[in-house]
Image 1 (cartoon, rainbow, N blue to C red):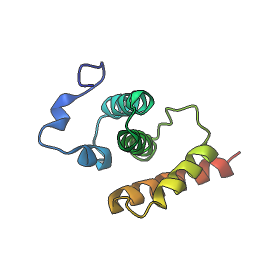
Image 2: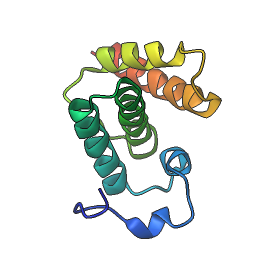
Image 3: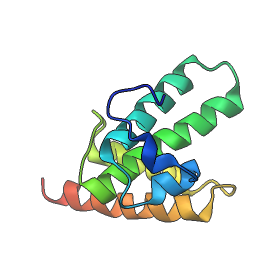
Image 4: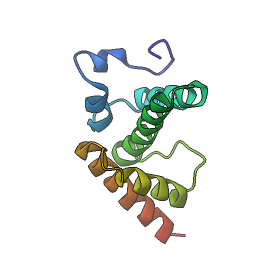
Length: 116
């Protein structure tokens, strides 16, 4: 993943993936690489748990890009993203920090839907 163009590996030093996803200063290119890699991983994995984790990382990267960089880098509509974020938030085992991230992203999606 770190060999991909646009990945700023300097910003990863000593940080967890969660910290990178929640940091407003995380590089947009790095978040896109994380999104792309997790999408690829979720599609190629045969392990259900690995697929679930990759999917959560994928949506967390999308949420971070929406919140911190005002970028939507997916073909999913704002309505579809809103629904996906809502489903993830409902998981009882979801980390509180990710629930907050998805909640903030949902507010952005809702505001974008209202502008139509």
